[in-house]
Amino acid sequence: KESIEASHNMKAAYDEMESTRQNNMATVNNEYAHYQSLIQEMDSLVGANGEVKAGYEERVQFIMTTLNEALGMEMTMQDGVIQNYQKERESINQLLETKKAELILKANEEEYAQAIQKKTEAATVYANAQQTFNDILKQAEDQAVEVQKVYMEMARIESEDGVEAAKEYQDAHQNVFDTYTELQSKVTDTRAALMDATTAYQGYNQTIQNYE
Image (cartoon, rainbow, N blue to C red; front, side, top):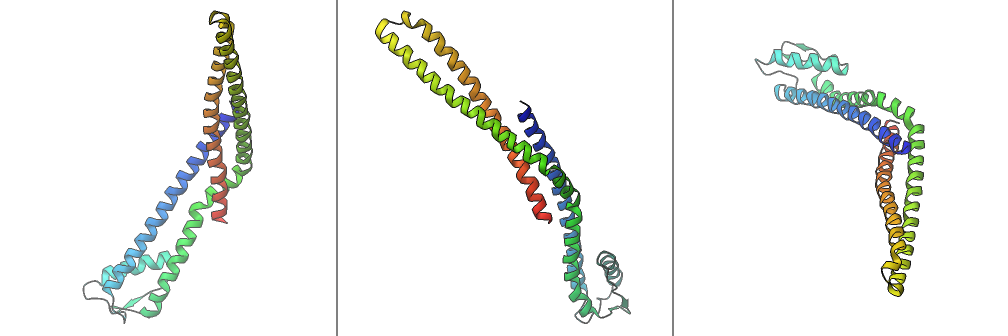
């Protein structure tokens, strides 16, 4: 029972961490998409020589200011023309990818620390869950043999001496079968616990590998 509870708790902790990580990554992807959208809009408003379409100077200035702050750039515009536009434009994509990588690392930093902290405990819970499942499965398999053994003896006595003579074995068969049924239920429970423990253990390790 303790092993089952520990497995479920470990899985719940991992699920919470993974949910936070996915939310963080969604925020990163949305931010990245926002910058990409601004860059595409700027491309549509600026010519190859850096000249801004008439009437869109304020909008392009806003985009430039946003990208400058986000990517550490120093784009400037004079008289409706972005200075050194070709050179600046070539560096934008590289800087954006670098920015995304930084955001991803930051978004996963807390989850990485938690995975490091939980890794050893998760390994212990997984090992215990595996052992508990194996033990219960072995008991169920042994009990299945006992059920068959009692049934065969009951059938033999019924065949030789009649149903009434086998009454004792009928009761015994019911008892061993009930025990087998209980063990089968425990097999189901411990298998589910093992799956939870496995998910958490592998998940924490994958989180660490992805970050490093």
